[in-house]
Length: 105
Image (cartoon, rainbow, N blue to C red):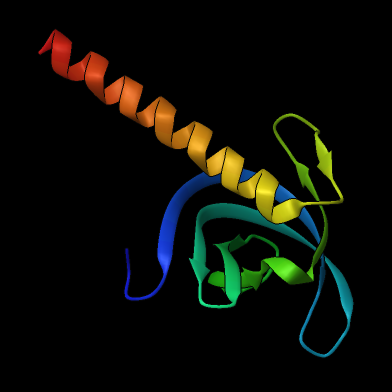
């Protein structure tokens, strides 16, 4: 938890069709690092690899389409749900890995 925001760690390489604040449609290639869910907003945090902006947040409601670069899976609807499920799967995998590491120690 971070204030009123809940932060979910996330690791993914994603191609986004994104509409910026000015209404311009752009394609972004992002190394996702977290999903932040807060009061009335959801942000995908990550590194926009083709710009000099470095780390930034993308409003999930402005993502029109995303593609998982690892699997090629395309999401055009229920993008927040897909991101949440990905974060949950990764959290379970991390927890399982930690349990195995501790059992072996």
